[in-house]
Amino acid sequence: MRSLLFVPGNSDRKLERGFAAGADVVIVDLEDSVSPSDKVAARRIAADFIADRRHQTDASVYVRVNDLSTGLTDADLAEIVPARPDGIMLPKSNGGQDVQLLSAKLRVYEAEAGLPDGAIAILPIITETAEGVFAARSYAGASKRLAGLTWGAEDLSAAIGARAARDEAGRYTPVFQLARSVTLLAAAAANVAAVDTVFPNFRDMAGFQAECTEAERDGFTAKMAIHPDQVPIINAAFTPSPEAIERSAAIVAAFAAANNPGVVAVDGKMYDRPHLRLAERLLARARAAGVYPSQGPV
Image 1 (cartoon, rainbow, N blue to C red):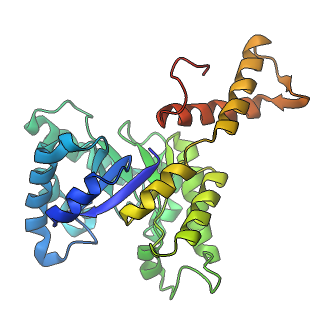
Image 2 (image 1 turned 90 degrees about the vertical axis):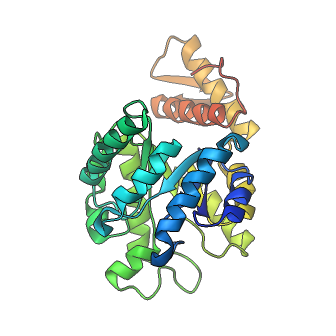
């Protein structure tokens, strides 16, 4: 996955637009974009839409439920799981134990809906509380359902009392840079996708493009969007370029031809085992994006 688009779960019109936006993942939202008085209606609208319109999109469909502390999670799951979403986004996750608790709940609802055990993946937002930031390491090995890790700044701002997450130049302040870095490292430790957070100003396309470029440079493999117009920019930024694919394929082929030594030379440059691993990861991303043949080298 490269692009993950949030869509409010209480609007058929917005859901229809979101399903047609070309995102790799559509996140049907039952949390922040839905008022407390509209939660019940939103569950029904979202479940009916997913069940009826799933065939109209190639995107994976995730649902952001209300966090475990609200007492609303089970009602969300009871309504949503029979619609067979691909995954659940868990907000305000405080550690691997929250993923395990959600997994146990899903196991029950999957059985009741006639779904295979483990059919629904989990994508937690891991930095929306101070406790969550400190528990980032606990996601490694927490559950086979874990599809990735992502982070958020707005709820963390409220949790710690920060007046803003960014400085006057638009850069994240140090505490939010820490949350971002922790997410990237935790995803690597858990061997799952690292998903960058949203860019709230959807009219600032230049700033958004720059943030996507930086995220991909740093090791994130996907980014969340709050507006359909952001989706093409994300997909382009997180799809490996032809030049990068060619270079990576050459590195992988050189190691294979030399019976996997410690170092090889390609076009006059030396590449060691970390370069091989990086090349393999880039080619895997290219395959997932459909821009590199599946029968190519690993």
